[in-house]
Amino acid sequence: MVITIGGRYGSGGKVVAQKLSELLGYRLCNDEIITEAVKNCEFDMSEETFRYFDESQGSASIAEMERLSGIQRANNYSDAVKALSFDVVPLDRAMAEVQETVLRSLADAGNCILLGRCADHFLADRPDVLSVFVLDEEENCIDRIREFYPELSEKEARKLIRKTDKRREDYYSFFTGKRWGDADNYAITLNCALLGGAEKAAEYLAGAVRAIEK
Image (cartoon, rainbow, N blue to C red; front, side, top):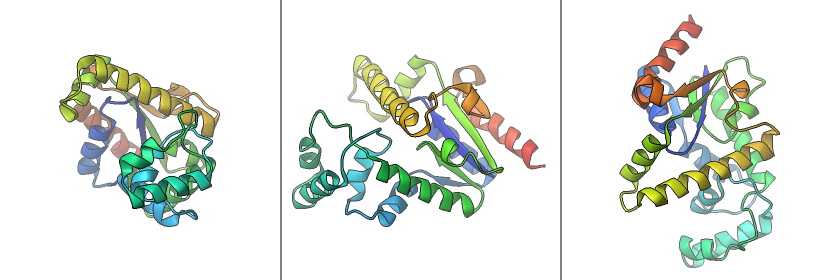
């Protein structure tokens, strides 16, 4: 089975995925998606530059991405980011296409958990896909983010949630034509706040997967 997990920023989707991987013995694919996408790109881009553009609805040309990657190699990632035009939304269709190819390849390899990147949409034609969306109360999201980024204030964490969720929403809408987070797009929606936390939510999800597999 292939389990796709999307979710709001800080909602615990990665925690759910990690715990679910442990409970089911499924391969967890997240950073690996980027690594494989970079290997399969027809254009020259470093992994860090690709990661910056990841899950961003965009119109930047391949030429600009190559230019930024060259700046990064010559200087550093910070300089590459500073070189971005403020009016350019960073990510074009070529990146989404190569990620779709990677997602399909990982799914073909067997039982796995895929995080984000419109995997639920790109793999919707497969009968072995279970799509999941994770959410949580905003205060819990803020706590998770500040645990990972202790230098952020509560206000900054809240702003980061808004910005990241908008970026994900725009990306999902642009490449799928559907509304991000809409329950109609997913087989299961997990609310970590109502289920006792992300790990508990993963246990519930593992039970559902086992029932489906029988």
